[in-house]
Amino acid sequence: MPYTIKTTKDGLIYIKSSSIISIRKPNTIDSAKVAGHPLIINADQITFLSFNMESKVTYFMMNGFQISMNILFDEAEEALRIAKSYVEQVIKP
Image (cartoon, rainbow, N blue to C red):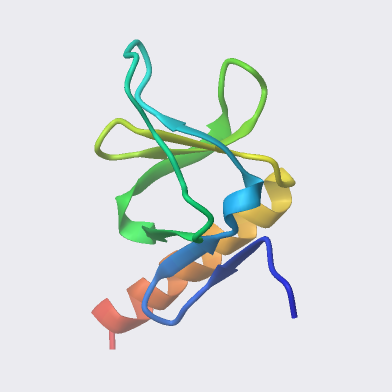
């Protein structure tokens, strides 16, 4: 079954490369590219989920990067919630 965003029991979030608009740090000219492979993010590294200045759904990361996606906010929020709940279950047996 095709996916846009999915989670694993290890607390990882997979985002389909065609759904990613940009991966960049604000106020820099640097950006990253996704070459046809899914982007894998550790849910612990996500600071919060919101909209960026262009009103795109964005994961804001601890390292300063912003991952903007072309998906619904509810889908991104659910994936983050599920991935973080898996991590909390491992930490709190």
